[in-house]
Length: 199
Image (tube, rainbow, N blue to C red; front, side, top):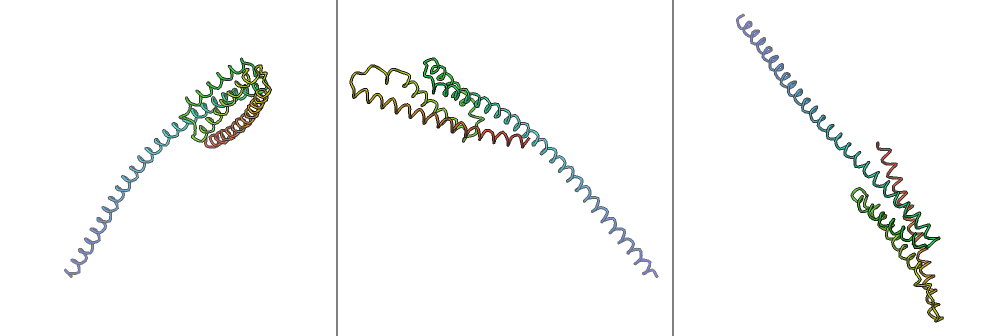
């Protein structure tokens, strides 16, 4: 009977020790799980803060970029309007104003370059190039270079050909910069739609 009692006590002790071990393992696991959860919560909070900061920076950048594009678009429209006016009227005063407007547009593109997407920057520079060539052609047409007193019939014919060639080149430039402006307008419209849908 002693053996039976002893084996019963041993059995109870083994069960108690086993239960104690399970309780300790569970407590340790719960503590580790709790610590892991706490670490995860801190990491989530840090990531959320980083995301908020990045989102705020993006909003600031987007606002700056939007303002830059708006300013550039106003400059393009004003320059285009003056170029179209000059198409019909070659007054020296208009050419001088056009030259000033073109310099203002060129400066606006240079100043805002860091906020302008590269493909749009290239288009803007192409527009400016066409505007400059158009200005050059209008200046030549406006001067007496082709319209001076020419007595020699052969020189007069050559002068007329040069004049007509310049008018044709300016017409092509006029069409090219208007097409480029439509292209940049479409690009900016799409960019604006994207910004609005992401906010």
